[in-house]
Image 1 (cartoon, helix red, strand yellow):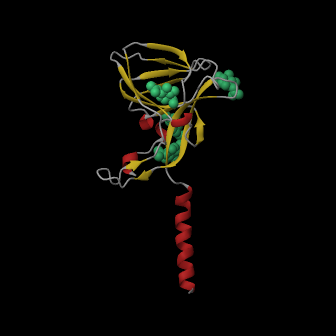
Image 2: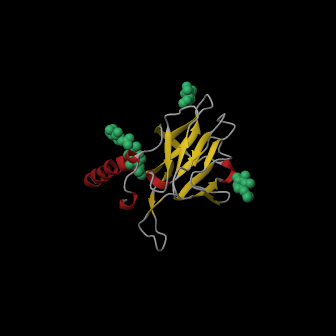
Image 3: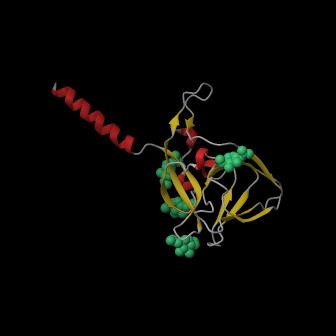
Length: 180
Ligand SMILES: *[C@@H]1O[C@H](CO)[C@@H](O)[C@H](O)[C@H]1NC(C)=O
Ligand SMILES: *[C@@H]1O[C@H](CO)[C@@H](O)[C@H](O)[C@H]1NC(C)=O
Ligand SMILES: *[C@@H]1O[C@H](CO)[C@@H](O)[C@H](O)[C@H]1NC(C)=O
Ligand SMILES: *[C@@H]1O[C@H](CO)[C@@H](O)[C@H](O)[C@H]1NC(C)=O
């Protein structure tokens, strides 16, 4: 009886710290601060990163990103300058080829590199007109076109998250996800 109790406590003591630090995906968000300026933040999503049991991908790291409204494939030409604009609605942006630079009109020193090899490969754009007075800029300075998927969330939902830190996510905010 005593042995059983001790064994259970030991098990609980070992599992609790792991549960408290469940892995979740960190993603860069373009959002706005309290005075209506667009800013970058590194968000830690509340949805857990799990190892999937889906046939064909068994054991791969996977994070459910929530329901989405639709998906648009967009190709910008080399050198295109989109100017300052608000996110039209809350949406995921997934770069496929090429690269872009997102600028912040109220913080000229900040620039976010958007490409498939950025940390975790996906961003969330949430600086809609109700939150940000001019939004963000988008430049595509490469010599080739850039392809992006734009995926608005269903019902304009913002994924549940905590703010890990101000500024975009860096290489410090990503582990080798394939090694989960
Ligand atoms: C919002 O960001 C702008 C530019 O980055 C800054 O000047 C302003 O003080 C910030 N406002 C708040 C409430 O942090
Ligand atoms: C895609 O979804 C957004 C957000 O819900 C919506 O505003 C937009 O009209 C949709 N686009 C099309 C072509 O249905
Ligand atoms: C990562 O963290 C280290 C230690 O805090 C820091 O020196 C380094 O500048 C960070 N790297 C990036 C890309 O932010
Ligand atoms: C998220 O970022 C934190 C530190 O900023 C890091 O400890 C954690 O491993 C990151 N999560 C993933 C899944 O990359």
